[in-house]
Image 1 (tube, rainbow, N blue to C red):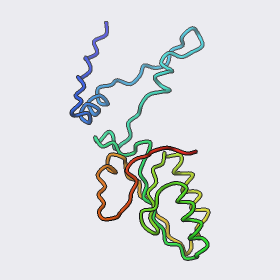
Image 2 (cartoon, rainbow, N blue to C red):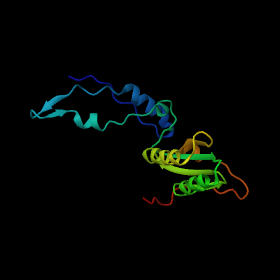
Image 3 (cartoon, helix red, strand yellow):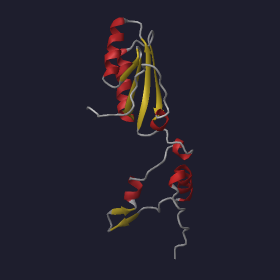
Image 4 (cartoon, helix red, strand yellow):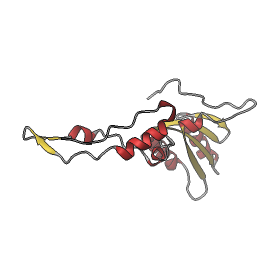
Amino acid sequence: MNHEPDPPPFDPTNWQESLKQWIKDTPPPPPARLLSGRIPLGWWEEAFTYRPNSSEKRGHPCGAHQMLTIVAYDITDRKRLTKVAKFCEDHGIRVQYSVFECRLEADRFDTFWTGLEEIIDPTTDRLIAYKICLSCAAEIRSAGTQVHQEKVVAYVF
């Protein structure tokens, strides 16, 4: 007879606490046993288990799959400056002369960053990217004629 406690009720008004409690109360999956001699039992759960990141465990959903990334640069050579600007325009929106907002999936960001590193001269140029989770990005304030990316309208690959 299995005497596992009932899962705690989900509270939609306080999902962070519910998530923390669920993480704490969820037992680890049982060790794999073979089903029909070939497929291990529990393989589906093991393969597709949602594993919250450290921010989610603390109740803050940073580290989401898609992040708002602020990219800023100082490039010393005009030719490289033009290349970096065009490269950034392909991935985001210009908000200042040398500052872009990009909303990218984690794997797309890695490709984007590698492309930028291939263009710059690391001995004279400066390049920085700040990742901001989408829930924090909703709190961004702007004034005047400032333009920034409110939300993604479409993805073009």
